[in-house]
Length: 275
Image 1 (cartoon, rainbow, N blue to C red):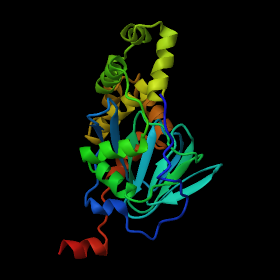
Image 2: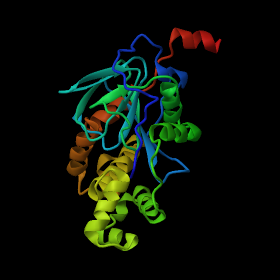
Image 3: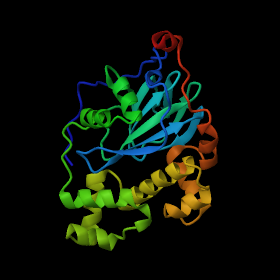
Image 4: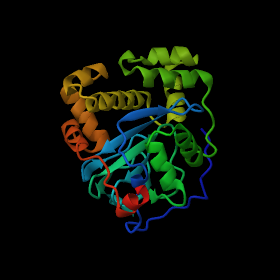
């Protein structure tokens, strides 16, 4: 898909830890959700992270991280970027560290990284507040965030959009490559190339990512990891755990343990404003 580089939100790598934590504007931490944008077939899953550090991992999609009580830092061999809200390049391995109570992440499935920076940029202007509202579940904010970071993104053809929706809605369906080719009306190899060009992920990786989103929501809801693994199409618990760690940088058990620490603390400014 053709993309136009976003110029008005130029990259930044400054430390903005002196600013008020953005998510304190929300008052409560989000739960694992997958919100649909009416103008796009892609969901924008939100994941709460209640730990202080994530091991090296590549994001499967463009991600926006918002710290709850302080800055977020992402780092790899190319350098480090710190800010209250960060926009992180997909498919690039990196570690993440958070202030107390962690952060929240919204994945903007289907969007390219609109900057030239090798790892991430600090969100500026109204983007941090917009990301916080999107993480809080506001459909209009999600649509606006996707529009700002996806300027120039061409809409998917109707048949491709239907395929994306089907996979996201039911990971257990395990759509085979032959079905993908049949729906697109082309031979298998060409269908796989078209799918990757449209989604940014290979057909296999997109199905795995959709299954992980489904499993993560079930785990947060209290479903046993073993049951969540089977319901999301994984062979067993070990398969889910390996995939979970590879994509999120922590194990399912660590994610569960961190959920109890996920609520943001109100700042003194918040307390004064609420009186």
